[in-house]
Amino acid sequence: METTAPDSKTNIMEKWSKRPLLIAGPCSAETEEQMVTTAKQIAAINQVDILRAGIWKPRTRPGSFEGVGAKGLPWLQQAKKETGLLTAVEVATGKQVYDALHFDVDVLWIGARTTVNPFSVQEVADALRGVDVPVLIKNPINPDIDLWTGAVERVSKAGIKNIGLIHRGFSSYGNTEFRNAPMWHLAIEMKRRNPEMLMINDPSHICGRRDILQEVAQKAIDLDFDGLMIESHMMPDSAWSDAAQQITPAELDVLLEGIIWRKEDISSEEFHQVLERLRQQINNLDDELLLLLANRMVIAERIGAYKKENNITILQTRRWNEILEKAVAKGVKYGLSQDFIVKYLDAVHMESINHQNKIFNS
Image 1: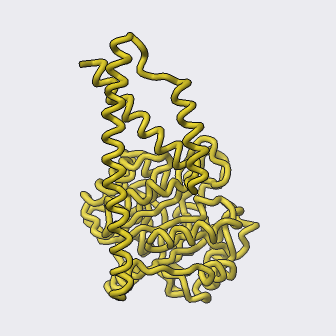
Image 2: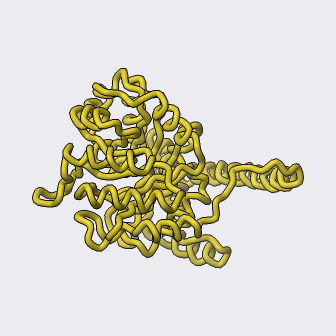
């Protein structure tokens, strides 16, 4: 197996530590001309660090374009030679890992359809054993943070030191605005669990369409993501896959220029003093909320005991609907979103039921 040259490896690690790290390129490598021309246009905007392209494309149904396969790797290699951009491809099998590394691909990523399958992740991890290459891991299609964590652990145990995460959204029933619902709370939780790990946002797969790419990309940066992966094609409307979510390199330049790049911290003493005062107010309010919730559960237990005495069921659906309806109306007046109120009260309600269950089982 060939490995990348030392100079290239140094360049990879310099880019890997850069913030923001920007990855862009076509959804799929289609022809050598398309690949090299797109790469040149992306390099010309002088903002992108790594060129991405799909060589193997896992599709939901047979008969869809599933990528050109390994014959596209020399095209990517030629694009790298002519532009100086580092390269990245998705891999889903051991052979794909070997083929990608043979053609000097600099960064590998594990896609959402692979992350969901521990057997596939393990096959990729086994192929990576003994190789020094950065690996990005996309969240699984379904909203399961343990699957995402498991993929990270498998790759880490294979000896890969430089692992990053890609948030590309999750499949969800009833989702209409996004191709894949962002479910930001899951990405935030994954970032909390892995604070030193690179976290990239993939607005292309979250959005599934061009018109909201900017909005999602900005939100990711506002949430302290470390970079973006955006699909860019020289003629997106003619793309062989995912045409609706790709943009031209010129449009990519405009998008990146339009982002307000936030900083996680600044050195201003005054800023930190003000922030600390506000945070202390939050801490005090959180303490009060916890005390109030604890008192609420004490009352819930008393209600549970009274229900038990009178042989009444724990769940009172009509009562719960009344509480929810009133709370939503009141919360909206206070500037709280309906979605938050419902999720919060659902959690409180389940905790109350658990407390009453203990009384019934005692």
